[in-house]
Amino acid sequence: MPHLLGSEFSAPQGRVRIDPVNHHMALYPRIGRANADGQFTILRESKFAVGPDPYMTRQTLGDWVTKLSTRDY
Image (cartoon, rainbow, N blue to C red; front, side, top):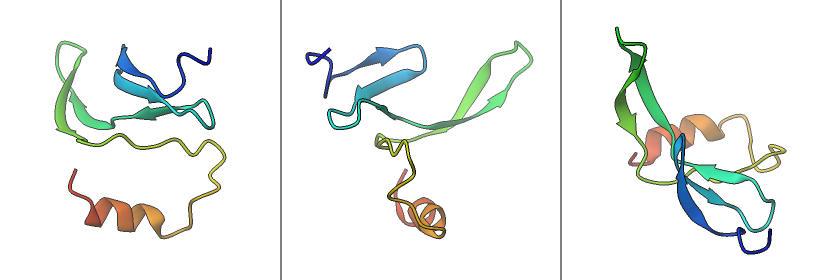
């Protein structure tokens, strides 16, 4: 498994990167709308990966509002 740590590759949900410290994946979030075919039309997609914080140790109550309102996604 050490050879996977820090690597980035295409997965079924899109590009992912495995964090070498905590072994969780950084993801590129998307916002979509379900269409008539049962698929999703992507409305917005992040240019940057969102790093993993599996135990929510780096978050405070206002973090999400600040991150979503100040970052250019």
